Length: 140
Figure 1 (spheres, rainbow, N blue to C red):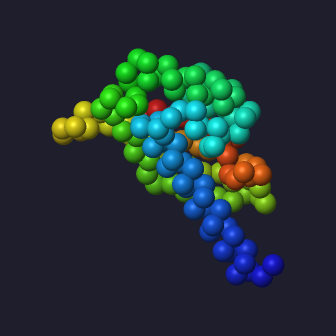
Figure 2: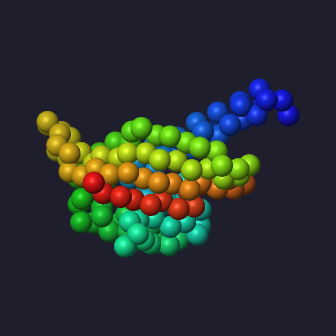
């Protein structure tokens, strides 16, 4: 494989990974949470170090609990905004990404920032595509 081919593959991988990060935010705000299995490895972990959950089923259940409480999802008046995404390909089938997040509320009028922080994601390429294997969440 030529250097140009390697660079093209890496750029395509970076774009696919950035799209996974964006789609998670879209699904969280307006989609079907059962779609998370498209974005997370079955054994994925998510959360701040003090409250990490393990497995995509637990990630989905946690998100459903936030929706039931009215803090996220359709009708909550909130939006997740992901910015400053930096993706590093670390191996043939592994990558890392760092990004900042903000949660806005009252989006039907002048929005306000409810919270902000950073994601540190570890990705793994699986037969169906790039999946998050671990997401560390920090809140600023």
